[in-house]
Image (tube, rainbow, N blue to C red; front, side, top):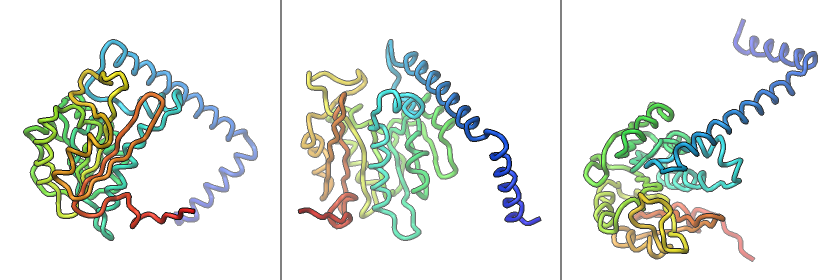
Length: 266
């Protein structure tokens, strides 16, 4: 029996079973129950990990299984989407970009947003727990997770994209300036640095005690990028509890531009 014929038989049996038994409401009920159970488990995990203190990295399965539905805030997914635009901008025909990801955390974005669009991804983080979690939950053949401090251990090589997501704020102004030189040296001609950070609270404090420097506004972030790149773009998004900054820097074309997008204004 050919594969196509076997599939046709299976589909016919399934169609008959659906007419005979309430399979659709049963399957939907099971899915709904499993979502509720997963939501409760991840809500518990969040409170255990974050109520008294907070770890160095965030487990974004908490967003996927609980916080997104509970809070109706989509900003965790912005990060993966906007850095993916940079990967697409350096893709050339069948050539997929070679990616270096700095401070990868739990590897959620690495796997879910970048791995299908990259030839290879080298992801580094200084937290052993983060790297262990990434290897356990977000591994794939083209992803290599490394334990190391990017102030001293940025991997050698030339990359089409460097992603620095939700981590630049963990470094001092002096460290950021020094890291920019190393990052630029790892980028190929036409390569793009992309990433995300957060604007400081209105009261002038910090969102997390691990943050060394939170940015005042778009211009404050851009001043770290402009000395090293010809083209810089910083985008702000506003959510009820935070204001986010997304950045792209390159000596070539930026991923969001009038040349790439069709714009009709009246």
